[in-house]
Length: 270
Image 1 (tube, helix red, strand yellow):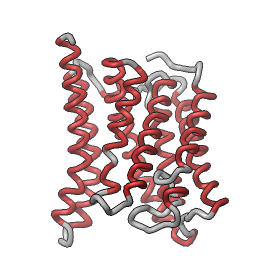
Image 2: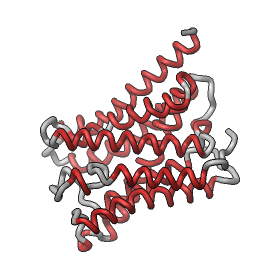
Image 3: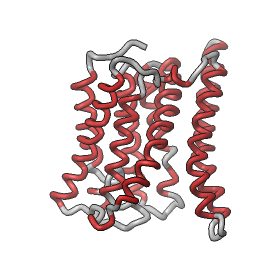
Image 4: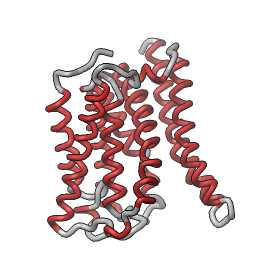
């Protein structure tokens, strides 16, 4: 491996470790403050601080490579930006909508309508915007593109999706809190979601608008229409719970089909 590729590999590994730090920082500090008067405020600040850390990590690593701005990772606005946003949003709606439909038809548990308030809607939008933007910026915009440069597109998508799925481990900690078969299904679902988001990034010409819109709509539907498992016990989560159940897999594949129909052959040049 040449010196340039070695340095590129070091950057990829270091960036992955920074993502791990970003994931762990908030719960570790919040746990230390649990029960104190500052807990709620600190928890909120730490949540949004995580995305500040992710943003500056992307900035620093792009500049380390000699780049000038994180917009180079796929945030430039072009003539097809609105199309990419629309396709991503529709694909995310189809994907998550399928999971909702299966739950409705076969006895899965959805959030009671009485709990879907304006406060919940506004809160989820405020939370989901930075989640979608900064996770896509880092996992697809930086990690996937750099892994693709190192190892080719298939490996780049697979390895970046694996990192994406494994760094969602806080959802099932501590060990034993969630049954192990659910941990396995959840991790695979996150991996499959990463594949879909990675392909949407590639198919839209390495632009982030489609994956951001898909990610945003998926999360909005997931956290408004479903109870937040495992914090809230649900019926048959291994079958019906979005992201935790088997119904998520065909949902993601349907979303991918929509992406392929509308994006294939319409790839923008970088």
